[in-house]
Image (cartoon, rainbow, N blue to C red; front, side):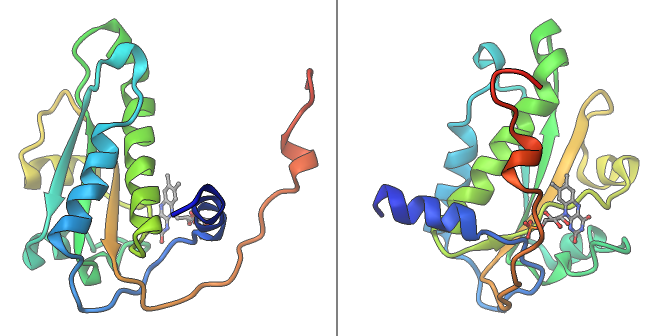
Length: 168
Ligand SMILES: Cc1cc2nc3c(=O)[nH]c(=O)nc-3n(C[C@H](O)[C@H](O)[C@H](O)COP(=O)(O)O)c2cc1C
């Protein structure tokens, strides 16, 4: 894929909440996870952990919220977890893990796989259900799957409102 079509894909990305039944292939899934592994992190500390959830019953456990009901229909889910172990990772762990998850979202997008960030989860319940250490932070839940919808463009703020040249 050339640079322009890669940028076009990033610009056209939308959150996908309807998925085909057909699963994402292992090769594509591995590329998505590798994109997370290769993400930048403060002082290269990589304080992230990713739980890959394929099992239907477990996906259903992540679908209980008002804004997460569709998670169960995804091909697989990644739970992004920050487990800090020093001052740098305590300061930057959530940012690092967020960057890694978004790398996965974009790696999925360029391979034709849709995804949606999910903030609608109960952290303590997710920790208990998936055996996540209590000192960790569950950053987000991201379901992935072959898109079965084409959502329209969401309104985004104009560039002039959010980009400040030289000073605010
Ligand atoms: C941190 C975060 C949490 C989100 N949580 C949810 C969620 O719980 N359920 C949901 O359907 N969408 C969720 N979204 C998706 C946003 O609603 C979506 O990104 C936004 O409306 C812009 O749409 P777009 O992604 O198609 O550009 C979340 C996005 C982010 C970044």
